[in-house]
Length: 136
Image 1 (spheres, rainbow, N blue to C red):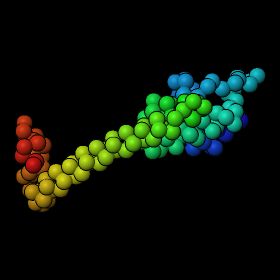
Image 2: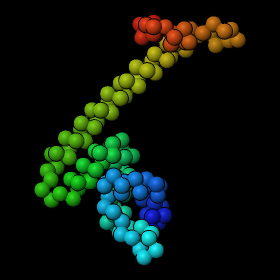
Image 3: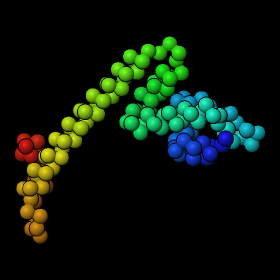
């Protein structure tokens, strides 16, 4: 299949597929006589795998490592599980940071009258050298 077909079936853009190929995430496509890339069913499965991993927030490097584990008959499921739980820990940290950001923004929004006045406690807090202390 050509790159546009692989893109459609994998849910990735042609540009992304070329990038993954350049980065060695998937093997280089065979070239047809006309110079067009031709992708195998195995490469399509790899692209779908990478897309699902990326959709779950894994970095490209992490996705590549998971793909390597998929193809490694010596893999241990404990290693895969540990990687997933590490990723869950990272997500939990991000959620905590986002919750703190949301709470700070809500606090700032409650301090602002939101009228036609030029006075804005939100901008004052953001422009202060000690913005973190004033926001909290």
